[in-house]
Image 1 (cartoon, rainbow, N blue to C red):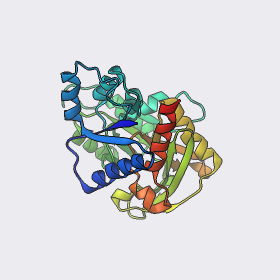
Image 2 (cartoon, helix red, strand yellow):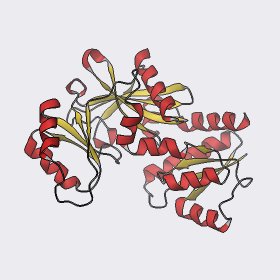
Image 3 (cartoon, rainbow, N blue to C red):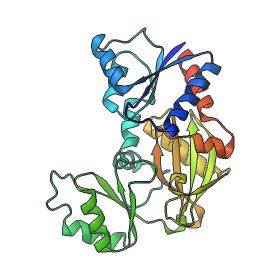
Length: 292
């Protein structure tokens, strides 16, 4: 069985390279060949073959955020893990929120989504600000809709700080969310593959409201309550995901509050923390799905 691992041509850090190597090694354990190619290589290959790759590969493991490319590969006849629509729903946090909002088993922070804008003049209206002040209060969380590792997430303690953050974000889309004080500096990452949670870790940071390990947080293994696992599995099902990292906050009374869903979650820290290799689980899942 031969598969395609699509990665971004412009990421070359050790963290990414190690992750790609883990996936290829895991494929080898399943007697599968996993050929790594960059997105730009695949656009060329698709064009050269008139956008028909059926029969060339048995599947595609898509570890990029180029949704158009993922869709082109699907149209060429490949089964893509995760699908283009699932990646699109996770890559934009506002789309994730809207996709899950009406599901009663998914609790999320109260959220304001930025209106569409075409230039920096008038980045936010007075009514928008006034409603945030009245309904969310301060501090509140400002998230750029597209971002990773918690680096585009900010805490605004006042109206002045909120306006400054919005001004800095500029034309990029963002959300303003209720601050879950009970989860300050802590959350849980649950790794889902197929219809099961394969591993979870508790992340905590005494020096930052964000718990991400990349931002200096620490981690330890945890077995969440059934309600937490159920929420993670439900979110992945509603978003159409084959696998994902789901981040959940501690609400009032330790009830789970969904933070975000990562379709291409890095799992090296999870492996270091729990000893469970998500790459192995992902490749076993893909092999089973392709054999159906």
